[in-house]
Image (tube, rainbow, N blue to C red; front, side, top):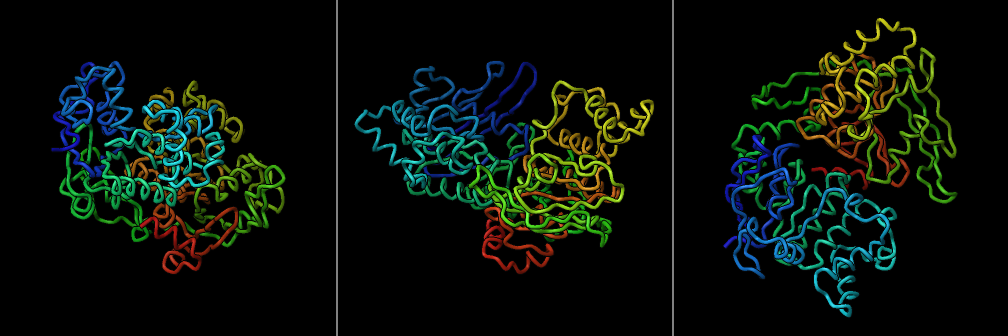
Amino acid sequence: MALLHLKNITIDSKDLILVNNVSFSIERGEIVSIVGESGSGKSLTCLSILQLLAKNLTVKGEVEFDSQQFGNCNLLNLPVHQLQKLALKEIAYIFQEPMTALNPVQTCGQQLIENIKLCGFKKAEQGQRLLELLEMVDLNDHQRVINSYPFQLSGGQRQRIMIAMALAGNPELIIADEPTTALDILLQTEILGLLKRICKTTNKSMLFVSHDLDAVSEFSDRTAVMYKGELIEMNTTEQIISNPSHAYTKALLACKPSADKKGYYLTTLKDSQTLDYISVPLVPNPISEQCILNVNQLTKIYNDSYKALEHISFSINEGESIGLIGESGSGKSTISKILVNLEQASGGKLSFNFKNGGELSSNVQMVFQDPFAALNPSLKIKTMLAEVFNKHQPNIKNSEIKAAMEQLLVKVGLQSSDLEKYPSNFSGGQRQRLCIARALAAKPKLLICDEATSALDLSVQAQILNLLKDLQKSEQLTILMITHSMAVAAWFCNRIIVLKNGEIVEQGETDTLFKSPQNAYTQMLFDASH
């Protein structure tokens, strides 16, 4: 019989149905992925398995689990004390963000030992179990990891600690909720490879949640696609990727940026799931021979020893789209912070050439990765935009600012009436449009997008990338696109700069670089993204 069987799971909040009649099973040793956009009900479905839903939510249906302790049981009817016992040893949960899930004031060793104790290991066994877990997740520098606090480890190492904690009781089933979303492509590949190896060598089952079809393509045995609270399609992962049957799944796959779509608008997903697959060409943005930014031998050293950047040199011409790519810690964001004066360089020279003169902050604006953290939740949109207009466009009269703000919102695909709303009234994609509007209110010449689409669903990402291309032409923008997505860089950028450990390893025309990378690291990035 199946290890886990969800039967007709329905989750509602008062009169609102959030998950509707979802059924599927997971066999022993099988990896099953649930894919869908934000709000599709993926995480709610997983949280319902261990009764982890918020108290205002009601769940109906059955969650049958073949438990070693309690036999074949319905987890929704299991008393709390029995569910806690089962959760420690038989079903483990890996959450999305390790910096939130890990205790910042305890060492990683202390947190692992605490989990090992809870799983019933005697004192004499705990040290050995700790070393076994670290070996299992390839954290071989045992003593350093044990004595480190979470902030002292890299993102990939923190995620490995989370996996080790989940494995402490040797569970039969692992539920992993977006465990690789915040990681760059190389780390994502590493972590997914680790999870798959653990499952296949120990015959563990996994329920893996993702909004990224690429992430699950070579990872899971079967994939379920959710849309608006319903499971609309389930099949082998190979079949879902190569021959999807549902219009929504086809639409989701069509939204992905890629090198072969360069020069054409990306397909976007409508609620009706109707898609026009006819490629619509983008009008090319004119590129001037005028250099707008020259970076010469840029160096950044922290604490007199750590070199975050070493002798970085590149230039950007007016109207160009430049991609800055590399894994976490390569120095991408450090460069962006220096360009907008959030950090000071330790050496080298920056030369800006803006025809209109003006302040640096007026000419260079940044769109950050997380639209939820980037907007002040206590300010109305009109207040937020008015501040920017008053500082950077003082020539606009107060009586004209409202009309200018309304035009700006319409330009980024929002409504003029949105001025009266707060950030909490908007979705993630809409908030990113607001961040773009705020940046444009300064009338910049250079727009820096620091992972501006990496936290977005595929369909929303496609909308934002199309919008940026339109705005680049209408607003005569030069764009520096910082990303760890090779697909985004391939579609969006004229030229690409590849960073590793604070140094440029390769740079050149996008098409040339993709067809014939000269550096082994660049080749590795390309391989991981395919």
